[in-house]
Length: 325
Image (cartoon, rainbow, N blue to C red; front, side, top):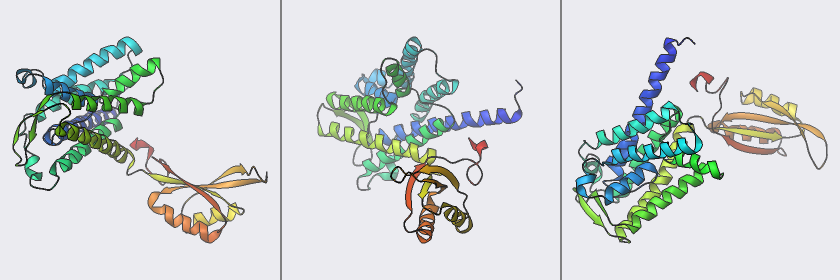
């Protein structure tokens, strides 16, 4: 099969974007979340927890967070291959490697790079956790959109689904909760900023107020990451699908075409009460146009029955081009 120059450029762009995504993830975690005393889930959260309970000679030397992430993902990859077979793409392996590399590179930056911006602001720790989570979510979303994956929980989900069908969301929730609860029960030594913005070592005892605060920060981080991933992946593509049920469906479709400048699709329908054949008018539009179309429908037929549903992406004429996928 002949590979064109365009295919090469697209491939290069995808790997550059995945590299950028992993940098965003590492930067948000190391420069925002950790200095604020935060915590998270996944392979990065587990690596952070292990790093915090190791002796200083190991945690600051060979077993850095970046190296621990790589070790954890390698172990999960081996288990995944043994249990479910080789189902991991090259992009996933690339993201796993780049995540570890970026964590080690970002760790070379001054740890108070972001702290100096927020110190002195009320609730600056929460602001840093939210900013860090948003940066992590951006990195994950960018990688997902290029076909990559950060490994960790994805591999765990594949292993669990080999024996029992459990949704990805449940696996993510269970693993993240396990990591966050463990952080409350263990004695950990972490580098975080004090109220003056100076980074120093803090020993967090089991069940201490700081331990519970870190757990709460972790749940905030999980929520923000989830929202950011959804927003980045579908935020600029979100549209609504409107289903209109009315007597004069032909006039309704014509009105939408003329006044709303939108096409409509007529779908065969039948009411179960009257058993009368009819047609439903389906319209797909941008969210910003939804209220305008609803007003026009109300003017055309006040007795019309409507349903409005969100769709994550619409591709084709009048919307995003298929070649952007």
